[in-house]
Length: 128
Image (tube, one colour):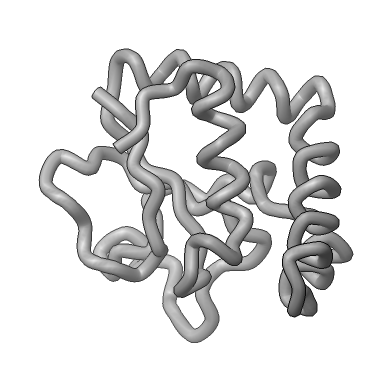
C-alpha cells in the first residue's frame, strides 16, 4: 500500500487506487463527468494546492533561490493545523491503501507536488 505522486491527465498505473487532484482549479474544457474517466482525478481536494499568490511565486521562479522561496511559503501553508492533520491522515492511510495525489505540472521538480511528496515522507508515509 502506498501513495503515488502523479501528473493529472496521465494514464493510471496498475493498482493506483483513488486519484486525488491537489489543484486549485478543475481542468479547463473538461466536463465534470469526464474527470475520472479522462484520468484527471476521482476526487478534487484543493486544500492541498498552494494559495493563488503562492502559485504565482512558483510560476515565476527562475532561480533556485526563487523556487526555495515558493517551497518555504507552501510549507508554511501546509503547517496550519487543518492542513497538518490532512497530511497526517494521508500518511496514515498510505499504510493501508493505494491512492495517488497529483497536479497538472509537467515537471514535478518545479511543482508543489515535489514539496508535498517530502512533507508526506517526513510524516512516515509510504510512497512509490
